[in-house]
Amino acid sequence: NGSMGQETERRILMNHQELLKSCIKEEAELVFDRFSREDAFELGCLLYENSKRYPDPCCFEITVNGLVVFRYFPQGSIPDSELWLKRKRNSVNLMHMSSLHFMAWLTDFCETLEDRKLDPKEYAAGGGGFPIILRGTGVIGSICVSGMPDHMLDHQLIVESVAGFLKRKAGVK
Image 1 (cartoon, helix red, strand yellow):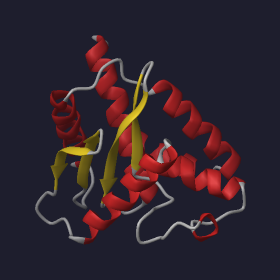
Image 2 (image 1 turned 90 degrees about the horizontal axis):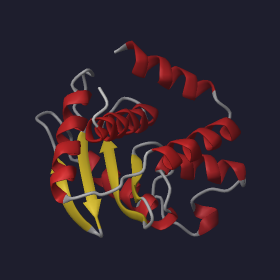
Image 3 (image 1 turned 45 degrees about the horizontal axis):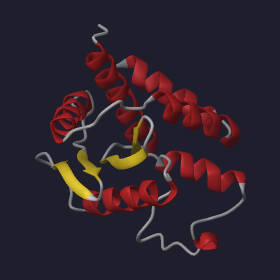
Image 4 (image 1 turned 180 degrees about the vertical axis):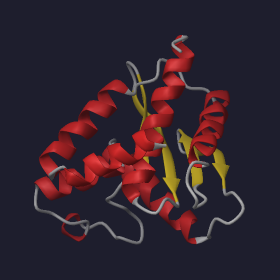
């Protein structure tokens, strides 16, 4: 799909200030009115379907209130992805922002994970983790993807899938 590739190219060219603004905008727009375990399953399946456009298998995890409610490791995925899902989830849970937003935020403050006393074995600053934000409540969970050739693609897969899911739920074609 050309649109996802073009969007990723655009993101790569962004400086961290532009990336920060883009992430803040995405998190403000991609908000759920409700989010059930059935929604998690439907969104997880949509992530998987959308990922088939790429040659490398991706792994997916959706958590709500600390409980893993959807997780899938397709054939050909590697065990290393499980560690990356955990790191991305931990970053979203700690910062209440996408893991890509966290990367841009750290860059903006000229900091690293280590500067913030965070173990890089436990946290990731890069694309692939996104908060489930419930309108009027805040962050209730995370959506994580690992396995794309670039972490920016992990992020873009989530953003496009959540946007499509929200449009479908709103009855927009």
